[in-house]
Length: 377
Image 1 (cartoon, one colour):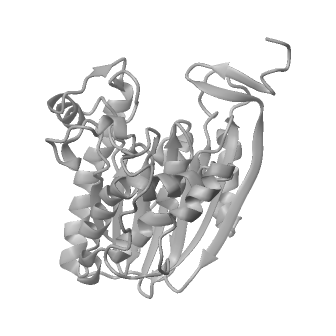
Image 2: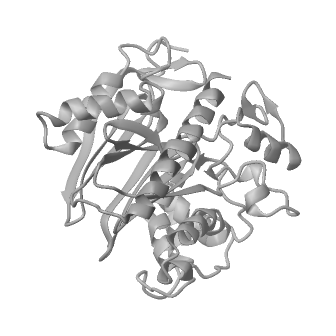
C-alpha cells in the first residue's frame, strides 16, 4: 500500500482511528420552566461520528425528554433512534394514560420493528446517506408512503411493498439511554452501556446499569437463546448484551423480543426527584471509559462554581477525557454528553421521600456495584 493511502487513518486494536483527532464540538443549550440543559458531541480520534442524541425540553407541556444513542458498526441506527424513539414514546397508548414506563419500554422494542421491511430499509438508506445514488433516489421516490408525517395515530408506519420488503433489519446497532422528566418524576430507560447518573447532595448514583456480558442475568438470557460468550463478547463479536438494531442476534422466531440473544428491551428505573437533586448526566461510554460516575459529578460541581453555560462544561469534560494518542484506546471514542439541571425546588411527600431514599441508597448502589463488578470481570 502506498504511503498516505490510508488518508490519515491508523488501525488500533478493534477500531479505526484518525492520525489526529477531530476536536470540533457541536453544542447546544436550552431551558424552560422545569429544566436547564446543555449538550455537546465530539468525534475525537474515531474515523467517523456514530453518536446521536435528542433533547426535547418540551416533549409535551409537562414533560421533558433527553436521550443519547451510541452507534456501533455505523451511524444509521443511532440517527434513526434520535429521530423516532421519542415520537414513539408519545404515540404509545400507555403514554396517554400516564404510564410513561410502559410507553418508553415499548418504544425501544418498536425501533427494531420499524427498521425492518421496505420502509425500514428506505429510512435507514436516507439516514446513512446512501439514497443519493441514482437507483436509490428513484426507489425512494417510488416507494414513498402517502400521507403527512405528523400523523398522531397509534401506528403511522404502514407496510410498504417493494424490492426490500423482506429486509430483516440492520446488522449495525446502537445503545440507547433516555431520561424523561415529568413533574417530580424521573424515568430512565437504558439498553447498552451508555449511562445516566444523578447527583444528589453531590453524591453520584447510577440510574442505569451497563449491559455487559459479565452480568449474570445477561449471560443467562444469552445462553438460553442459543448464544455464547467468548473473550467477553456476545457470540465472540459484540461487547454489549442489549442494543437497538444488531438484528443478526435477534433471529430466533420462537422467542419474544425480550428473550433474544441481544435485546432492545430496556431496564426502566423511576425516581422521585427531591430538592437536593443537583442535576443528571447522560453520556455515551466515551466518557465513562475515562471517568467514574463520581469523578464526573465532582468535576461538574467544580465547573458550576464559575461556569453557567452547561454545554461549555460538557466541552471541558471532552477536553479532559481526550487522549493524547491512540496508544491505550481510552479517551479515543466518540463523546456525547447531556447535562440537565432541575430549575424548581421539588418537595415530595414525607412518605415518598423516605421511600425514595431507600430506593436510591439500595437499588441504585447495588446497580452501580453490579456494573463495576461486570467491568472488572
